Structure formats: structure tokens, C-alpha cells
Amino acid sequence: MAVELPVRAIAPPARPSGRMDRIRWTLVDGRTVVWRNLMQLKSQPGELVGAIIFPAIMVVLFGYVFGSAIKVPGGGNYREYLMPGLFAMTALTSLMTTMLAVATDASKGVMDRFRSMPMARSAVPFGQVGGDILIGVVGLVAMVGCGYAVGWRIHHGILSALAAFGLLILLRYALSWAGVLFGLLVKNEETADQMLPLVFPLSMLSNSFVPTAGMPAWLRVISDWNPVSAVVAACRGLFGNPGVPAGHVALPLQHPVVATLLWSTVLLAVFAPLAIRRYRTANR
Image 1 (cartoon, rainbow, N blue to C red):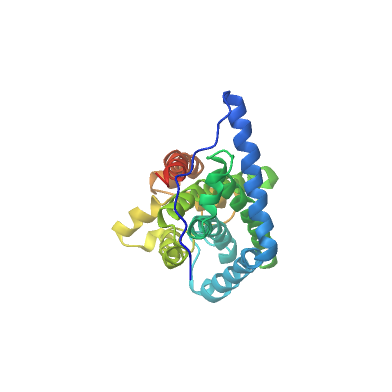
Image 2: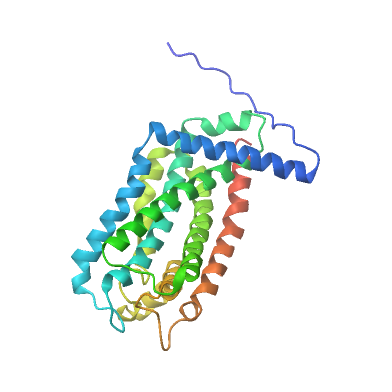
């Protein structure tokens, strides 16, 4: 016979008085949460394997199956046109993976356990995002290797390439905060898993795989103002890959680097405070 224990309100831990002490407290506790998430990979290696295998599948599927039927604007190799889109698609998956991880922890009571411990409240969301970024970098490195294997190349030097990868990581970081918020709102592993396919249209409604010029006017507006289109266009320009927009295109695609920075800033400004607030007030 199961015994139902009384539920008691959890008192918040004491906070350091000084501002710098609170920041240091958050960073140290956040590092612990990151380490905990990385150590989980030892018992659940499927996530890391998926981060490495998934890019290879996408490169083969899109590059060789669909590539022969798609013409690159201005000419050029489709697989070089494709790779920045796949990089952006990988960054977008952070929203899904982080949401699922947070919802799983919430459904199993791990979040309540964290709240009962004398640790900084904002450290848990920071730790979740930090762990996702490290895993995402591993997946990005794997995808770069796959890209080189199928003929993708960087033509504009290492500094431009680092700038492109920096934009991808920045956008992934911003999207991870959205994943933390949605995971805390859902609080159920199965529900979060059912919602994962809803994210894929964000990558399909963009210039990741095909030019937006052939889309209906209303759909082209959505695609051109999609933050994924901005980061893809920025990466194509910085890598020196074909498909850089020219002529009369939407404003975000005329200045894709600036547009990516603005989109990332807006996403961070909206979702990071909401995620931290949701975590702090979840039991009230």
C-alpha cells in the first residue's frame, strides 16, 4: 500500500548579500548543473550518439536524395549551398532537446529537488542551457566533418568561419532559453515529446534547403523574416558558399549578420527572464 507523504512548501535558500557574491554563487552552481548534465550522458549515451549520427543522416538525405532536383541560385554545388542550412537546423534542435530535458526533470521531481537545495535559483536554467551548448558544439563538429566528406568547403578564411560558427552558437544559446521555458510550462516528458515535430516547420519555412524566391508571396514573407533564414544567409556569406541573396530581397537578408544578432538578442531578452521567473515561481 502506497503511503502518501504530506506536501510542504519549500523555503527558498538563503542568498548571499553582495551582488558579486550572488553572481559567483550562480556561476558555481550553474557549473555544477552543467557537469551533472554531462555526466548523465554516461548512463544515457543515446543523446550524444544522436547528436553525432543525426547530422550524417541529414547530409546524406538532403545532399544526395533531394540535391539533384534543386537548382542553386547563381549556380554552384548544392551540398555547399545545403550545409549552412543544416548547421542552422542543428542549432534549432536545441529548442527541442532542452525542452525535453527540462520537462523530464520536472516530471521526475528533479526540479523540486534542486529547489530544496541551498543553491542559486537561476543556476539551474543557466546550467541546462550551458550543458546544451556543449553537446551542441559536439554535434556541430560532427556536422563539419560530414560536410567536408561530401565536398563542402570554407572559402573566406578562418576568421569569417569562426564568425559564422559564433552566430550559430549564439542563436542556439538563445533558442535553448526558449526550450527551458517551454519545458517548465509543459512539465511532462510525454507531452514535450509529442510537441517536438512542431519545431521542424521553423527550419523548413526558410532558405535552408530551397530558395525562397519560388514560394508564394505570403509564405515568402514568413520565410524571409524567419531568424533561421537570417543565420543561413549570414553563414553562406561568411563561408563563401553559393546562394547568397542578391537584388531586391527582404531587409533581414540584405544584412543577415545584423539580423541574426538582433534576433538572438530579442530571443534572449524575452525568454531568459521568463524562464528564470518561471523556475523561481513554479511552486507558488
